[in-house]
Image (cartoon, rainbow, N blue to C red; front, side, top):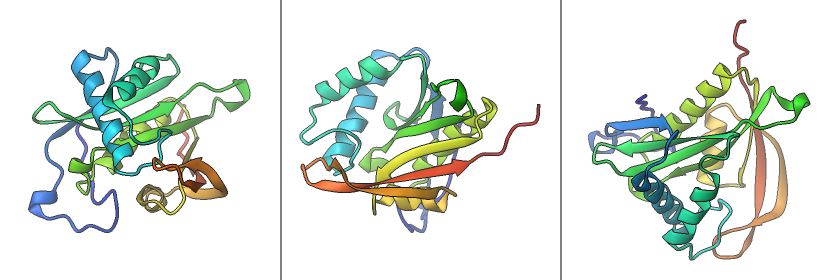
Length: 194
């Protein structure tokens, strides 16, 4: 499935050069070595760029790869990869569906990552749309996520209809080790007709 959308990381007016190039966004079902290597590169690049996504800098690509090896087919989480027309992985997002019986109406978004070379082209918005559509298809009516307070990602989510549930100060370390707040956000989804 191919998506395009405007301005994922701030108020960027798209120009012809900044428009989303042909990108395939697909659920990772049987990850190849090249796909895993690409996901590891995107994760390492985002951490090097200062993204607070659970890792400290420096994050060697090999360590990022080991992390992906351990979670890519965990059975409860779907991962979408965005691959450009050169075959390069440029982004990803995850949708965690595992929940206890009283929480089967909800899911959690995590690891929305876009390589720094591919930002400002609508890719983050397109990745989120893929995850949200699948959540709706699976009967989920509530999505949750957490993100660094004050980050471009928080602004992206707010523009996409996510509401702030609360902020926890000093919740997570940034890649450089400084503590930062985390904003917990939620989004209601339309309930599919049955």
